[in-house]
Length: 208
Image 1 (cartoon, helix red, strand yellow):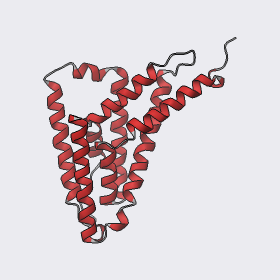
Image 2: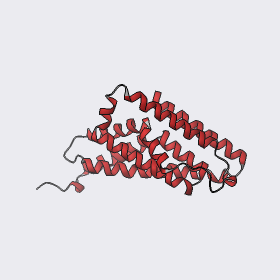
Image 3: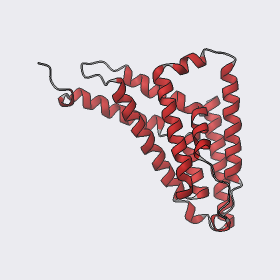
Image 4: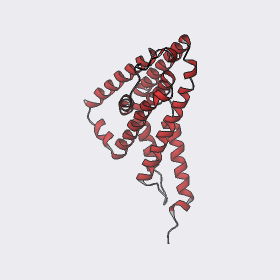
Protein backbone atom coordinates (compact mmCIF):
# COMPACT_ATOMS: atom_id res chain seq x y z
CA UNK A 1 0.00 0.00 0.00
CA UNK A 2 1.43 3.38 -1.03
CA UNK A 3 2.22 6.03 1.56
CA UNK A 4 -0.35 8.89 1.80
CA UNK A 5 0.73 11.92 -0.22
CA UNK A 6 0.59 14.39 2.69
CA UNK A 7 2.90 12.21 4.78
CA UNK A 8 5.65 12.15 2.14
CA UNK A 9 8.54 14.56 2.93
CA UNK A 10 9.20 15.10 -0.78
CA UNK A 11 5.67 16.49 -1.21
CA UNK A 12 6.25 19.19 1.41
CA UNK A 13 9.68 20.03 -0.01
CA UNK A 14 8.19 20.59 -3.45
CA UNK A 15 5.33 22.60 -2.00
CA UNK A 16 7.75 24.82 -0.06
CA UNK A 17 9.91 25.23 -3.17
CA UNK A 18 6.85 26.33 -5.16
CA UNK A 19 5.87 28.90 -2.51
CA UNK A 20 9.40 30.29 -2.27
CA UNK A 21 9.73 30.51 -6.06
CA UNK A 22 6.40 32.32 -6.31
CA UNK A 23 7.41 34.74 -3.56
CA UNK A 24 10.73 35.63 -5.17
CA UNK A 25 9.77 35.61 -8.86
CA UNK A 26 6.11 36.67 -8.84
CA UNK A 27 6.44 38.90 -5.78
CA UNK A 28 9.32 40.97 -7.14
CA UNK A 29 8.64 44.54 -8.35
CA UNK A 30 6.83 44.66 -11.66
CA UNK A 31 4.08 46.67 -13.41
CA UNK A 32 1.23 45.00 -11.49
CA UNK A 33 2.77 45.01 -8.01
CA UNK A 34 4.15 48.53 -8.34
CA UNK A 35 0.83 49.80 -9.69
CA UNK A 36 -1.01 48.32 -6.70
CA UNK A 37 1.43 50.06 -4.35
CA UNK A 38 1.16 53.32 -6.27
CA UNK A 39 -2.64 53.27 -6.36
CA UNK A 40 -2.73 52.42 -2.65
CA UNK A 41 -0.48 55.38 -1.88
CA UNK A 42 -2.31 57.80 -4.17
CA UNK A 43 -5.90 56.85 -3.30
CA UNK A 44 -5.74 55.13 0.09
CA UNK A 45 -6.51 51.55 1.12
CA UNK A 46 -10.32 51.61 0.90
CA UNK A 47 -10.48 53.25 -2.52
CA UNK A 48 -7.83 50.89 -3.92
CA UNK A 49 -9.50 47.59 -3.06
CA UNK A 50 -11.50 47.34 -6.30
CA UNK A 51 -8.44 48.02 -8.41
CA UNK A 52 -6.42 45.44 -6.45
CA UNK A 53 -9.18 42.85 -6.88
CA UNK A 54 -9.02 43.48 -10.62
CA UNK A 55 -5.25 42.99 -10.60
CA UNK A 56 -5.65 39.73 -8.67
CA UNK A 57 -8.37 38.40 -10.99
CA UNK A 58 -6.37 39.39 -14.05
CA UNK A 59 -3.20 37.74 -12.74
CA UNK A 60 -5.11 34.54 -11.95
CA UNK A 61 -6.43 34.67 -15.53
CA UNK A 62 -2.82 34.88 -16.73
CA UNK A 63 -1.99 31.88 -14.54
CA UNK A 64 -4.76 29.86 -16.23
CA UNK A 65 -3.64 31.00 -19.67
CA UNK A 66 -0.07 29.92 -18.95
CA UNK A 67 -1.16 26.60 -17.42
CA UNK A 68 -3.36 25.68 -20.38
CA UNK A 69 -0.75 26.59 -22.97
CA UNK A 70 -2.79 29.38 -24.56
CA UNK A 71 0.10 31.81 -24.14
CA UNK A 72 2.30 29.59 -26.30
CA UNK A 73 -0.30 29.79 -29.08
CA UNK A 74 -0.50 33.58 -28.84
CA UNK A 75 3.26 34.08 -28.88
CA UNK A 76 3.48 31.93 -32.00
CA UNK A 77 1.58 34.64 -33.91
CA UNK A 78 4.33 37.13 -34.89
CA UNK A 79 1.94 39.96 -35.83
CA UNK A 80 -0.15 39.74 -32.67
CA UNK A 81 2.62 39.95 -30.05
CA UNK A 82 3.78 43.52 -30.94
CA UNK A 83 0.18 44.78 -30.89
CA UNK A 84 -0.42 43.32 -27.44
CA UNK A 85 2.86 44.79 -26.22
CA UNK A 86 2.01 48.23 -27.60
CA UNK A 87 -1.45 48.18 -26.02
CA UNK A 88 0.06 47.12 -22.70
CA UNK A 89 2.67 49.90 -22.73
CA UNK A 90 0.10 52.55 -23.69
CA UNK A 91 -2.27 51.56 -20.89
CA UNK A 92 0.47 51.44 -18.26
CA UNK A 93 1.66 54.91 -19.31
CA UNK A 94 -1.92 56.16 -18.96
CA UNK A 95 -2.16 54.69 -15.45
CA UNK A 96 1.21 56.24 -14.53
CA UNK A 97 -0.14 59.62 -15.68
CA UNK A 98 -3.25 59.23 -13.48
CA UNK A 99 -1.08 58.37 -10.48
CA UNK A 100 1.33 61.25 -11.10
CA UNK A 101 -1.51 63.79 -11.38
CA UNK A 102 -3.66 62.46 -8.52
CA UNK A 103 -4.56 65.29 -6.10
CA UNK A 104 -3.62 65.13 -2.39
CA UNK A 105 -5.99 63.01 -0.29
CA UNK A 106 -7.11 66.04 1.72
CA UNK A 107 -8.13 67.88 -1.44
CA UNK A 108 -9.87 64.94 -3.07
CA UNK A 109 -13.66 64.90 -3.32
CA UNK A 110 -16.02 61.97 -3.64
CA UNK A 111 -16.08 62.24 -7.41
CA UNK A 112 -12.32 61.98 -7.85
CA UNK A 113 -11.42 59.53 -10.59
CA UNK A 114 -10.07 56.33 -9.11
CA UNK A 115 -8.81 53.26 -10.99
CA UNK A 116 -11.57 50.65 -11.26
CA UNK A 117 -11.42 46.87 -10.95
CA UNK A 118 -11.63 46.66 -14.75
CA UNK A 119 -8.57 48.92 -15.00
CA UNK A 120 -6.67 46.55 -12.72
CA UNK A 121 -7.84 43.49 -14.64
CA UNK A 122 -6.77 44.97 -17.98
CA UNK A 123 -3.34 45.93 -16.64
CA UNK A 124 -2.81 42.45 -15.21
CA UNK A 125 -3.65 40.62 -18.44
CA UNK A 126 -1.53 43.09 -20.43
CA UNK A 127 1.41 42.87 -18.01
CA UNK A 128 4.36 41.27 -19.86
CA UNK A 129 6.18 40.37 -16.65
CA UNK A 130 3.26 38.29 -15.38
CA UNK A 131 3.48 35.80 -18.24
CA UNK A 132 7.24 35.39 -17.92
CA UNK A 133 7.24 35.11 -14.12
CA UNK A 134 4.28 32.74 -13.86
CA UNK A 135 5.58 30.59 -16.72
CA UNK A 136 8.98 30.33 -15.00
CA UNK A 137 7.46 29.32 -11.65
CA UNK A 138 4.97 26.93 -13.23
CA UNK A 139 7.58 25.29 -15.45
CA UNK A 140 9.96 24.93 -12.52
CA UNK A 141 7.29 23.20 -10.46
CA UNK A 142 6.35 20.95 -13.39
CA UNK A 143 9.93 19.82 -13.93
CA UNK A 144 10.32 18.33 -10.45
CA UNK A 145 10.86 14.60 -10.39
CA UNK A 146 9.75 12.13 -7.78
CA UNK A 147 6.80 10.10 -6.61
CA UNK A 148 5.21 13.00 -4.73
CA UNK A 149 4.98 15.31 -7.73
CA UNK A 150 2.48 18.14 -7.20
CA UNK A 151 -0.69 17.86 -9.24
CA UNK A 152 -1.89 20.50 -11.69
CA UNK A 153 -4.83 21.66 -9.58
CA UNK A 154 -2.74 21.90 -6.44
CA UNK A 155 -0.16 24.03 -8.27
CA UNK A 156 -2.91 26.30 -9.58
CA UNK A 157 -4.49 26.62 -6.13
CA UNK A 158 -1.18 27.40 -4.40
CA UNK A 159 -0.15 29.98 -7.00
CA UNK A 160 -3.61 31.60 -6.91
CA UNK A 161 -3.33 31.99 -3.13
CA UNK A 162 0.18 33.42 -3.55
CA UNK A 163 -1.14 35.95 -6.07
CA UNK A 164 -3.68 37.17 -3.51
CA UNK A 165 -1.12 37.38 -0.69
CA UNK A 166 1.56 39.08 -2.80
CA UNK A 167 -0.72 41.84 -4.07
CA UNK A 168 -2.31 42.35 -0.65
CA UNK A 169 1.14 42.94 0.84
CA UNK A 170 2.09 45.41 -1.90
CA UNK A 171 -1.24 47.23 -1.42
CA UNK A 172 -0.69 47.55 2.33
CA UNK A 173 2.82 48.87 1.68
CA UNK A 174 1.42 51.55 -0.61
CA UNK A 175 -1.43 52.44 1.72
CA UNK A 176 1.14 53.04 4.46
CA UNK A 177 2.33 56.04 2.44
CA UNK A 178 -1.18 57.51 2.23
CA UNK A 179 -0.91 59.27 5.58
CA UNK A 180 1.93 61.36 4.16
CA UNK A 181 -0.12 62.40 1.14
CA UNK A 182 -2.36 64.98 2.78
CA UNK A 183 0.37 67.56 2.32
CA UNK A 184 0.37 68.76 -1.30
CA UNK A 185 4.14 68.78 -1.74
CA UNK A 186 4.66 65.32 -0.23
CA UNK A 187 1.72 63.98 -2.24
CA UNK A 188 3.11 65.28 -5.52
CA UNK A 189 6.63 63.95 -4.87
CA UNK A 190 5.52 60.46 -3.79
CA UNK A 191 3.01 60.13 -6.64
CA UNK A 192 5.66 61.17 -9.18
CA UNK A 193 8.14 58.66 -7.73
CA UNK A 194 5.61 55.83 -7.92
CA UNK A 195 4.57 56.81 -11.45
CA UNK A 196 8.21 56.88 -12.59
CA UNK A 197 8.86 53.52 -10.90
CA UNK A 198 5.85 52.02 -12.67
CA UNK A 199 7.15 53.18 -16.05
CA UNK A 200 10.67 51.92 -15.23
CA UNK A 201 9.56 48.46 -14.11
CA UNK A 202 7.42 48.14 -17.24
CA UNK A 203 10.37 49.10 -19.45
CA UNK A 204 12.55 46.52 -17.69
CA UNK A 205 9.87 43.86 -18.10
CA UNK A 206 9.55 44.60 -21.83
CA UNK A 207 13.16 45.24 -22.80
CA UNK A 208 15.09 43.58 -19.97
